[in-house]
Image (cartoon, rainbow over all chains, first blue to last red; front, top):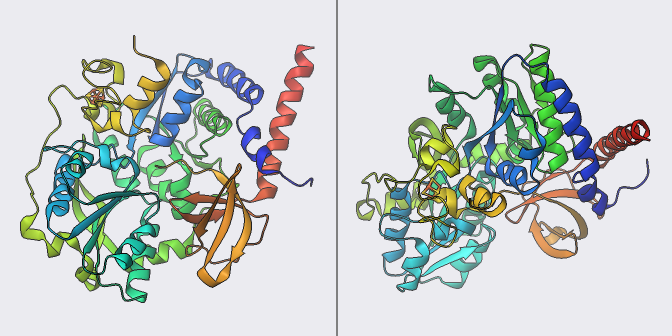
Length: 374
Length: 80
Ligand code: SF4
């Protein structure tokens, strides 16, 4: 086998001719479908690929994408951001968090706005940076506002493991790690749901294995294809789904065999299981409370839990979205971004009203950037 | 925050459980705390928020690419 170059790994899975050929195969097959295929792409990363590469336009009318709840920034309810803001206002606390989270509006403003008012809030690119900040500021308490799905939880576990091992007492955690399968169940529990197929995010399965979707296939008789994030990956996954539908089958398939196995990264799973346990309920933005859909620290690690330590200072009032915002319907597959009255008018990436517009992987943001505003 | 893109290992730092990777020209040091199997220079890996999540199986990637090439060649032959 010729040696593979990094460039080939990129270009090969973005090749426009391959995309075009897969599109034509999908079209031919889709002509045989009895009913439309409504594919939920659970993860915002796939939404981004679909919009960026114009895949929507390449597909026949009887295949529709429904943008799912799999963007950790989009699903964070306002009260959790309010809690982060409350933590940041405690003297001697440094709040650190990843990426886009800092721009998501809470009920009193975003973390960026609190930072402008003088709170010590630091965006970081990798969780281990929090360790350094804690080491450099021994007289302060550093709180890591941890977000993300199964993909990101092991990284928080390693951060915690290192803090314990190195004996760094001043690093605490506010845990907002959420789980994909219960969110899928919440979407499917709606009797009006139109979703009848899924593409699963490959990076979640790199950690968990493709196995986590077997119950989805069995319980809802829907095909699930674990898919990579390049346009060729997504098109190949759609082709597999259409094939299954035409043949009247539903199965779990793994398109991203180059990195995903059935069992996943077991070392990472062990670390997660060591530090975390399931939280009885977590409220999702747009979807409401979902039982067993998130994680929290195990009792042995409660000395690291900022939610416990500062419990009485944290607001618990549940805050709903801006009245005009339809993120909830969008996350359930009942509306498209353009259906929202303020899309592109009152709500833009510069002035986001809802978190689907803030995150670069949110459905509203992707539509705004790539589809243009009509 | 969630796009995972392939990178290539260019340097090993076993003493700090990390490696330097190249993501199409951008070099950075990332943690290997989530990897049980050892990494070698030249390996393709997936990175997420500063960690190697997993190796990419180069043979399986090459196989997919060969399959796509076949598809495209067939299409072009049919068009000609
Ligand atoms: S356009 Fe803005 S307000 Fe409307 S649904 Fe999207 S994020 Fe919410």
